Length: 130
Image 1 (cartoon, rainbow, N blue to C red):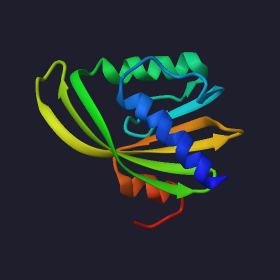
Image 2: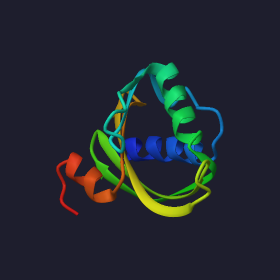
Image 3: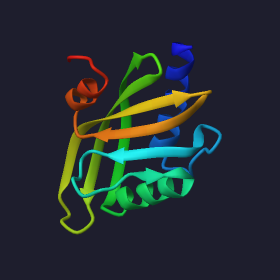
């Protein structure tokens, strides 16, 4: 099952990287998304919450690009490490940073996504040291 989870997350990340509309066949209808990069950001719930998170994230950038670097199998969770290149919409400042997502899966769908500012934070969240 673990390899299936990695493949599911790889598909979800590839779709996310393309900035195409969400592929709902990969995401549970009660999906939860937590952005650990902003202290005041609440959780996002369901498909509507997922879309709201995408808009909140994308609205901050005049341009952005993501590329998966690594997938780390943790059974029912998969850490996806991405390289993000973006330019701030208001500041015009360009940057490149490594971020990580922890994807939790259940019954062949993604049920939860946790967004972290670093691979180290994501690995700590799944109980694994870097």
